[in-house]
Length: 297
Image (cartoon, rainbow, N blue to C red; front, side, top):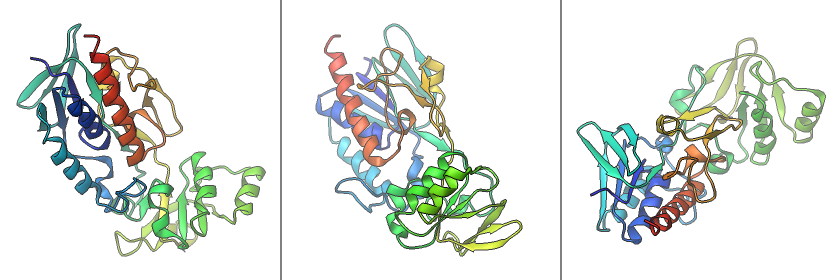
């Protein structure tokens, strides 16, 4: 018997959708590979009632609460194929496969980090992407922004609310007179030239090294890294995408349904901006929509 819903991705969006479906007494299968995007961070911030908690602990607790409901099955595996027929979706992984009448893609995205010495080992600790998620922890410290493109200017202007900010253009962020005036008005320091690496007692950060200038002290470095889909299934199924400054996201309507009937998407793969709070809200909406769509079956 097919599941009422198969959810690929068991992090914040996927588990939230599963919970709403479970409470509607639907049979739900969640398949998750166990690699959430924020696994590198020790604490998650900005989510009501859970501020400062370990994100992996939050996921584990949510999963335990979900599995109390009858009809919910959780499989820890990496989905390998998804097939679509008129009647159902077939999802396969090594050692197993199941079918369902509706499909939720909560597969997330992968950050395309620049190949800069000292960056990857600090990701999620002192090299960060979201000021709202991590800026407060570096309030009044020296904050850096690594130039990645036009979005870096916006990031630098915004981060000056948290502390003294330096924009490292890395020869990738051209600044016209208007941009320089905005940065000056926000007391943002501009350092031009090529960045050669990050230094400090890792994973802490003490400074950004420049090829021709030496070390500029900073305690945190924010980057607007581009993202790619963590899984190919949306493209394979023919879902449409929307372009954003950081990369494509799956196009969804207010009900989180994609352009392919019966396929829904929630979380980082289907929205900008990204945060735990947004992912949970999107998952809840997807779960409700999937349940109500099933009333017509």
